[in-house]
Length: 392
Figure 1 (cartoon, rainbow, N blue to C red):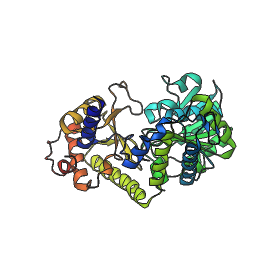
Figure 2 (cartoon, helix red, strand yellow):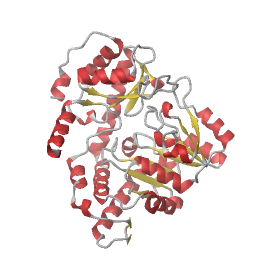
Figure 3 (cartoon, one colour):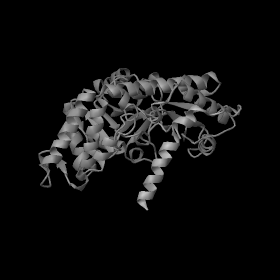
Figure 4 (tube, one colour):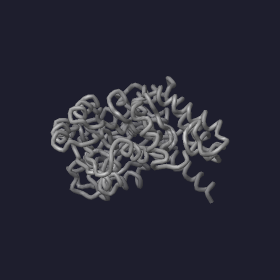
């Protein structure tokens, strides 16, 4: 049964045009490491301080992954054990602040993440949350961040999100945090691969703690990492284990190491630049055709489409794109959205996954733009040629 479902999923991923910003295609080497015999090994603790015997090889794997991670991001300390980005965030909070302390973070509808203090998340139930948002142009409201920071005196300021397309000014927010005596944390889960390629500012230069996933633009296995200044290393490690996790997944850590190796290669930098180029091209094409883009454009691997001036919801567009055109996107709330999280007034579009297809060029991107315009604006249905050759 499972073999059949795996085969069906392989077929689905090959035939569908996946434009979900948080997904990517891991290499065969990454998947081989993930499915290796390290899945058989318990390794509670850290290298040379395990609670189980027989970890001499596991220790080498984890040390190697940590060293590569520190080198890529120029970080003083790295913890590669978090099972996910959400758990990395949970551990980061635990390392820096206490329950009921105040966190200043980007609101969910402005592009933040559930784990940055949404009420339905554990983070929103343990800590006091104050949210900042976007200005009238859809740009991060730095003046509001400064005002709220001085007003509420948070213990922690969080930057980064899952649906914000522009480059974040980490240095500016770091200065605000320092002025009010707050710790500064960046969640770079979405753009970590662009940082690794030197195409997005490195938050490790300014933040006390940086968290990330490894499966989005980094193109690795599903998992998380935490980077921090050396003064927080002990607190971070204790927060991960035994704070919120038991044994690490050494097989996944091995796959993370492979992903880090790949991220240091010249070909990865070319891939990351292609993501940015493709995303910018498609975003401009849609904007030129009259589709409204949140923040006015993109400087990363994603952008948000604003549907408020149309008669369609994000849910309706998402369903029509998949049903009629084999295109997978996700509905997404936009800043000040009056629709529910089930309906939404936005669509999030990402190109990291499909940029892995080497034949993706301007002709294919033009066809994608024409499809989006047909679905959203009701223009004539386009004839598809290049996309059929790529996703056959």
